[in-house]
Length: 192
Image 1 (spheres, helix red, strand yellow):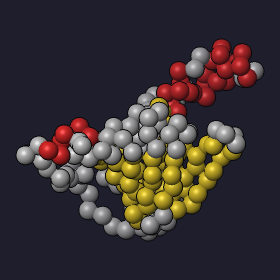
Image 2 (spheres, rainbow, N blue to C red):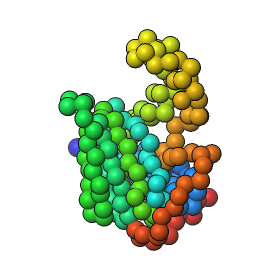
Image 3 (cartoon, rainbow, N blue to C red):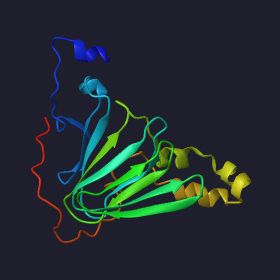
């Protein structure tokens, strides 16, 4: 039995809006609730709020399966199946889910404004490898030797990658085209 459950000070309630993981602006932000903030939970999750066209950039988890649940709005989720070497793409609306297996490369894009999803993990603290880190750390000479990619072209292609973000594109990119208001309205948390 989990020793945390035997603690007389056990708390089984928590606020998933209190820990800000990333904020791009008032409509695009991520809050989280994971094991360190809530020891009684043996899972963890991100609350992700997105505008149309925003992306949870390509990444994978080395230690966790992920279930993405659409609360409101919509997403297009894609995952690379390493066994078939094919991309699986799902269009999801409220109430629908996609399962992203441990170690599988994936991403998703909001199809409406005011999209809200939960990404639920099967471990208290998931590890993540960001595609941005992976791509920007590969020396251009390696890409040339492995795939005959011109090293200067590769270096130029990955030069804009400055940081791995939880939501993209980075604010420095050209303005995005915003869609009509759809999804659901949500009061944003007050971050201190």
